[in-house]
Length: 241
Length: 241
DNA sequence: CAGAATGTTCGACACTGTTGTACAAAAGGA
DNA sequence: TCCTTTTGTACAACAGTGTCGAACATTCTG
Image 1 (cartoon, each protein chain N blue to C red):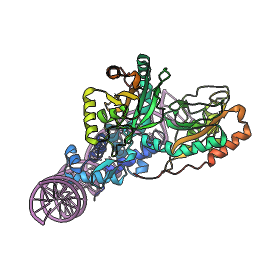
Image 2 (tube, rainbow over the protein chains, first blue to last red; image 1 turned 180 degrees about the horizontal axis):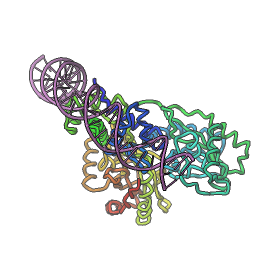
Image 3 (cartoon, rainbow over the protein chains, first blue to last red; image 1 turned 45 degrees about the vertical axis):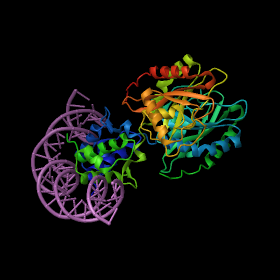
Image 4 (cartoon, protein in one colour; image 1 turned 180 degrees about the vertical axis):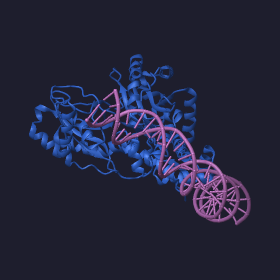
């Protein structure tokens, strides 16, 4: 069998564009492929012409929307189903609400939850969307996923981090800590922790977290929750294509 | 600029594979591309080797999962947001519950709803999954989308259509009618109607429906609901990439 | 089991893709 | 602002890759 060279390289290019969270320069791609710039240029122009990539005003290349996000709807549903036991056990262990969310553009999208049984509780409905920079779930994507810090950082409470360099530092701390924290940065009186959920290929697919009222969660308990969330075992994806 | 021929053809092939809801034969693809079979074979083998397509036991080719579904998470969220007014106006007009769902493998996934304000109501929670063959939303995908009749048809009520040829006939009738009907086929006492929602390219992306208790929905009202759902205007997708 | 249709392999030629260089257009520094 | 450096596109020419055609396998159909 004959492997078509230019086609392989074109597909490899699409992979590169998708892997990188940000638009890539021609030179970079040419280096990665191990070909001359002129060749890479032709490959990319072909991808653009076929509608599989786009070129922005800075002449950088990005994958087109039709390339699909990194994960499909099926992936998300599969993830949701395999995370359910973890959500339930977390709620059983803590008494607080547990959420599962995926990344959509510059927001997180809640795809599952298990509610607290206590009367005072946090309720992010499934299907709702929340910002990245001031929620534990969102910060988990910033720290462990391929999400970039959004262009605008709106203020929701007086604890919301709205300065980019402070947020970048917080993200670095999150990465070191192993779980993300929201300390009343999105809504007064709510504290959350969250951790990443990875797919079989090691890419972050979802964030899983616990949220509760600050009155029940002091600093010590917040740390305990973080350790608990991080330690929670999530059944691996059974690979049946 | 030079357009790379083999790359273009490879990308075109991926499009063909994604467009078709079912796996395609080599001959078919070769004809579509206007090349000899041997050439098409090499193209497809390259796609498979690069992990962008798969070949099943019947030697037919299908797009790989990584190609992404037909729609991305962003598409779904955008659709959900643009359908919200329609859901609300339908509930205001009928008093019954309205749902929005997308197709995931052989099930529909509820991504949004507006509840009825009446005490007796239907409640499919957002995030839940339902079968295709016995819900209005699912049948809308069978009739207007690219969904295939699932391999197994479970019985939920004594009205559930579990025979493939009867279901195929029902799907054809649905197509002619312009909206789908579930007449207590999934749950006793619940009747629903549903219509397709298309994306900017004309592909079905979601199903939008109304559900209510049979006691409030006689045959005449069911028809009215169908006409209403079908006539509901959904704001077109604003194309801002 | 024979015949038809579909898919894969093979060799050879021609045209496509790659290369190297030259030019254009931004970006960075003084 | 200018000059320098870096990045992207255009061009021509050769080599090598992709395409063709036919032969060989393999699976489907009656």
